[in-house]
Amino acid sequence: MDAPSTMLFGPDRSAERVVRPRRALRAGAAQVTAAAVGLALGLALPQISGGYQVTALRAVDVLKVMGVGVLSVATLIFSLLFLVVQWAAGNFSHRLVLFRYDPVVWRVFALVVGILVFSVTATLAIGSHRTVSVAVPITALVLSGAAIVLARRLQLIALRSIQLSHVLADVRERGLDVLQALYPSAGRVDGATRDDGGARHLPEVTSTAVWAGDTVLVTQVDLLRLVRFARRADAVVVLKVPVGTTLYPGDVVAEVRGGPVPDSDVLATVIGGLERTFHQDPTLAFRLLSDIGLRALSPAIHDPATAVQVLDAVEGLLRLIASADLGDRTIADGAGAVRVVMRLPSWEDYLRVGFDDLCRAASDAPMVLSRARQLLDRLRATAQQRRHRSLEERLAWVDEELTARHPPFLRDAAGR
Image (tube, rainbow, N blue to C red; front, side, top):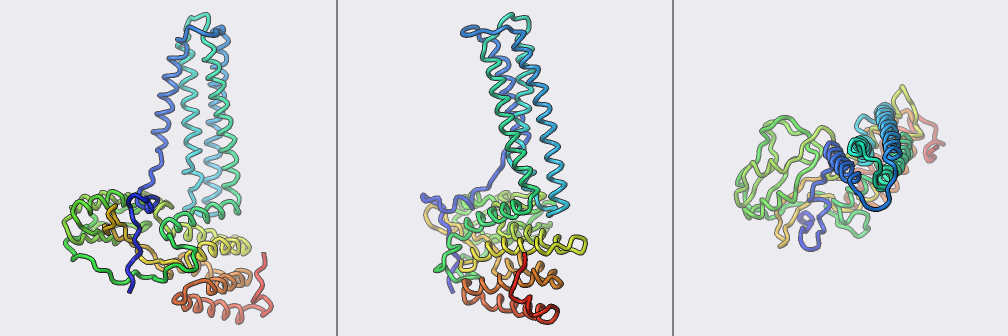
């Protein structure tokens, strides 16, 4: 059988999006940086003696107005944050945290902190001066304008985050992005046909890295560092825990084959957290879409039209990978030698997460079942031959549900 597809990490940087961990700038660091810049500007600008000058009293008035204004912007930020987070959790999914972690939210708040520090510092630095450089009020106006622009953008993002169509589009786009990064052949009709990766000639197992820490959710793996560790020891590290799963004490994280790689080095590359992230997690988009559809089909809501929209998004993701190689991925170093084997879901895994639960919950919703039938028919036309059996099994079940429990004229029509 064919071996897993190899993503080269060398001069072409073809695996850059996968192997390098994505680390968002922490909110605290952004705020500290903005405060430091505001402090520096507040101390330096009032000391400028050349150029155009304005009366210090007017400059202080501008700084006071700006300070009060940014507090109002901060109130708006927190109001939008609490509203959108509560709305998304109650109407979509508790795992949907797109707005909360949007960089714009924390950048706007950091800018507000910087403006407030600047206004207070500049006011104190002016002191008893009669005149001050025009750079002080101009800087204040520029910062205020930037805050208004970012606040408007934040408001638009918040409004998008409570609209179903935009949420589904955002989740789908993020899912497509990670799938295309992990499966370079995704979407190609003539792509690879492997699902399991098959046997590969790898060195003998020399050790296993066992998790000894607290229970943690695997959010990412620093594959770049792991490749370096394996290359230094002339070894191959086979990861046993997929991204997005929970690690418990005693779980095997990876097998080390060939040269010795210390367990501490392997475990140090595992990035844990409390919530899943999109970067290396190909099933997260499917999970979120399924959550939204299941909530829509719950007896308390009973909104099958929303579930139909969810299936539209799920079909877009499944069609992308229907003809792609879904086997495990091997990460090579710059010389082309395989150093890491990354475990990824199979075709059945994607169907179970993104389709099965939602379809089973739609037994009493002919609109959703009919749309599911269309989805399966279209996938069967584009998927690899070896994947037809799983699609035909589900298609037979959907046909049986439609025939046994619903009128025949609903079989081929998906209402919206």
